[in-house]
Image 1 (tube, rainbow, N blue to C red):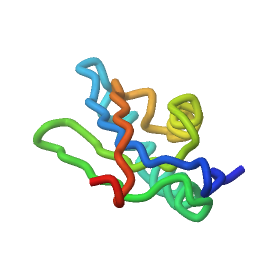
Image 2 (cartoon, rainbow, N blue to C red):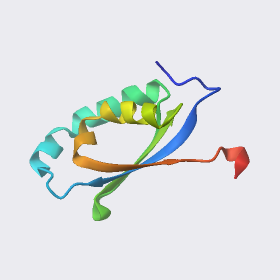
Image 3 (cartoon, rainbow, N blue to C red):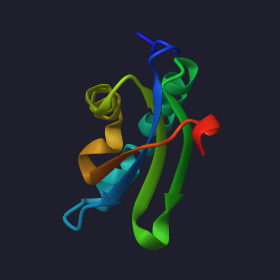
Amino acid sequence: MPPNPGTAQTFMVVGTLRDDTDLAEFAALREDEHQQLEVLRSQGKVGAHYVSPARRATFVEIVAADQEQVAETLATLPFARFFDADVYPLAPADAR
C-alpha cells in the first residue's frame, strides 16, 4: 500500500556495505535490486537512489509514514541484507 500523502514523510537511508559481503552474490542480485527499486518508485515509496562505490555506501530516499514503514520497504530490497542502514528523517521542503 502506498504511503498516505498526508502522513508521509521523507527519510534518507544511508547503507554501508558490510565487510563480510560476498561480492559475487551481491553482483548476482543487481538486476533484482534494480527491478524492485522500479516497483517501489512506481508505488511512490522510493525516490532518489545513489551509490558511492568508493565509500561502499548507498543512499536511498524513502517515503513512509514512520521508521517502521521504512524498515518494511527496505526489507523488500534484495541488497538490504548486505548493508548496515542508518535512517534519517528529513525536514519538509517548506521547513528548511
